[in-house]
Image (cartoon, rainbow, N blue to C red):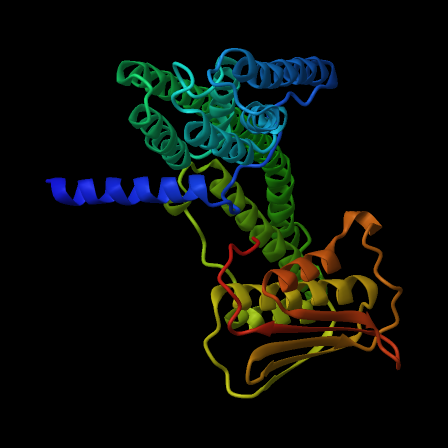
Length: 425
């Protein structure tokens, strides 16, 4: 249960903060025009506000000089009228400053003009002051609005009643002050609620657009799977059946058909796994195959040798446990490098070095065969782009280019302490 004493203490603290923010200028003061952003609306409203300021200020000066008894000095009446009603002109941009200046003028009126009239302020100055209060409540924090109301009632109306203004009339004025502040706060709350709803609507549209993109990608992936899976299945079956259809097939050709068959099966399995993830509504519930890593490096090298490359592997340093992202990225970099060597430098010698350094895993794959610079757009290939994306994801480094003595090299450095992120498939 809530402690009533504690709740009352919090209310008092908030009231003190509100009074302090009302009286002391600071960065908490709201700054910004309440006029519409469209000029064709802002200009007429400003002209109306200017006319009201001139009229209220003129009335605030003329009424004491013609009605109050004894009549004040013209200079005093002019200064009080300017201070009380003049700030209305800049109340839309600096409402707190306008209120402070006007309130100071009203307090001076209480001290200098009490007893000369029914109330110590001209009616026109009071009307301008109510409009300023509306602007304050419409732009300020609720805590500040409460402080402004407390200071207005306690610092202006109460002294006026004590110095001669009827108490019942002071209560009416206090009610008007509170009503204007409540109305301005309600308008401000409505505007804020509308802004929040507009932002939520924008976020909802962005979410719907993002969902549409994801659904379209999933649909394309499923269609691609249907096409690729069919052809890969045909390739795997034909490669499996070829040695039986050709009895006198040379051993080298049998090995070639075996490489084709295994590659087709592996590609088909990975395609099905990826599409399985896309089709699943729950990533955790999706059926997954173990991600390849450096523990399958021997299989990768064996496949490359069967394709005609002379591959040598060197592991430098003490092998250590690395994160799944680093392990998978290292495997894919070696895999893509061997694939490029097979395509651009068939029959070349390839040296693979896996070096476990103090803070990172270093992978170097170099071949000595003649080749042209791989074109990222050639046959739709994006091998180097994929490597760079993986390395960038792990905050690592990548160098790829021709060697001085011929051939091509890829050098990648993957930090061990890379932040965990969702790895590429």
